[in-house]
Length: 117
Image 1 (cartoon, rainbow, N blue to C red):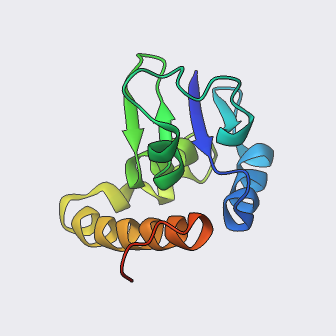
Image 2 (image 1 turned 120 degrees about the horizontal axis):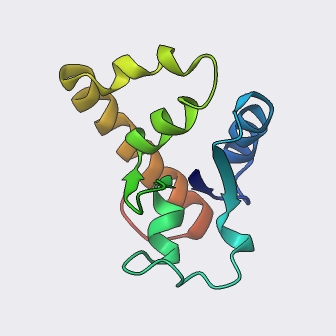
Image 3 (image 1 turned 135 degrees about the horizontal axis):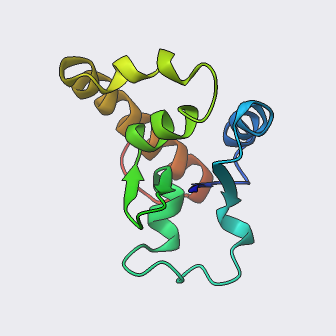
């Protein structure tokens, strides 16, 4: 079973999780980071890290982060195959840059991190 951690206070994140809830199979659990009883329960991963980037905890105990986490989460749906090309080397590099910039901007806008934009 995979667990996707998401920011439940983010309207865009909530919208995507709504789609995933409807479309995903039983192998995916959606976990709002703000509803974690103990946000320090995952060794080596802080709440801030969880909020900055999507994190998906695989059944093996390994994390996938960012673009990889998103593609893995959608692999639990019928349309997941459409996102697989995002992980091809050339595409991954370009999309990864856009995802990182978008995620940093989203985090800073929501949590006033003070990074230059």
